[in-house]
Image 1 (cartoon, rainbow, N blue to C red):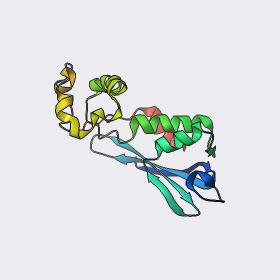
Image 2: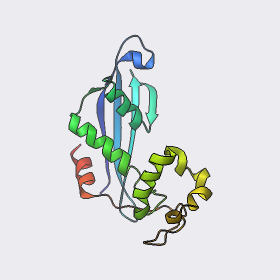
Image 3: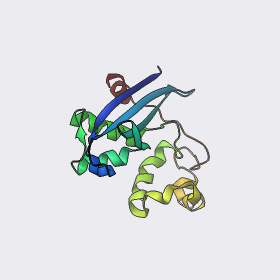
Length: 163
């Protein structure tokens, strides 16, 4: 199944982007694409002021920050917004994982300790010095040597369908 949906997430005060009037509109485009291995989720967003692009692409963190500051007047339910943020963070481009499923949990723990940028491609040699990333004990995969596909759960597919 191939699917593409666009929705208005919310409105943003003009001052947030240096305008004097007219609220900005935050939209997201959610796609399910067919790949050889299964479906891949892609989510991108735009923030516009009367059709003029102010920010676009991976705006997830911006939307979350604006929401936390009370500067995003949601046009979708709070529950839907939270689920969208959660799925965007976890499942966006599920066909482009540098690690296997076993390395995912450890990766999150290491990011907490060493910072978000630790798992950048320029740091691959250092990553391989970590025992479970040079060779996963469960499946033998060496981190970063190919793109690993992770199947989308039904709850993610169902969420996209009802948007």
